[in-house]
Amino acid sequence: MAQAAFIKNQIYLFLNEIGELSHFAGRFFREVARPPFEMREFFRQCYQMGNRSLMLVLVTCFIIGMVLTLQSRPTLLEFGAESWMPNMVGISIVREIGPVLTALICAGRIASGIGAELGSMRVTEQIDAMEVSGTNPFKYLVVTRILATTLMLPLLVFFGDLIALYGSAMVENFKGAMSYQFYFDRVFEALSFGDLIPATIKSFFFGFVIGLVGCYKGYNCKKGTAGVGKAANTAVVTASLLLFFVDFMAVFVSDIFYDL
Image (cartoon, rainbow, N blue to C red):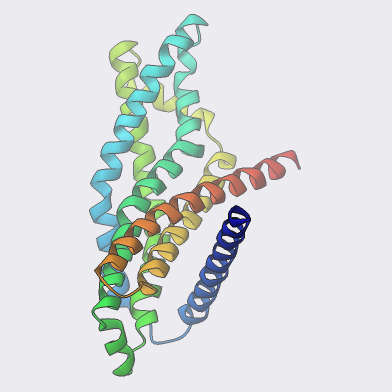
């Protein structure tokens, strides 16, 4: 009986969280089109989230490109299909690995940062002070950050894909004496707009989810210093889970489109 009550309570909390998050997203869409537009804060957030995440994304994607090639190479050698390595790695990185890996990195860095920053502002009553002074804190703090993550993530994915392919090309050049020109010719020959467009579109959704969850957790942070840590932690967990759900939906819709 107690276990049934616990499960019922968890389902209620989950549905309530989904409803509040949806309401928060609806408020964002209402506020984003209303003036004034906080362009200076928007560009500052773009710099904070884009430039300061770039090195982490590049290093991680570079290593992943090398590891993927090193792990796949022996299997392709057994079948005499080493020349297909650029095709396989290029499609894998551009379609799935690059966007998802970059989004998870940004979920860990950006979502937690936003949750902690807005959470500390809520705890120290800075957001309340902005409301009392007549400023719209939602537009200044939330709208700018969600727009910045939505715009910056596809750019980070683009640079991450490039450096991952370069890392793979380095391994092939060292292990198999494959020239860089031949490698990238095979990559671009294998890729099509059907690979690039869905990956780019879902990158925008990834960025939106990261910004939305981070802002929601921080903006609605509970009082106390423990609430700030909880907001940062739950922002990462929730954003990561939603990223996998969005990725599954994107792949599912893409498969339906290809079938048509």
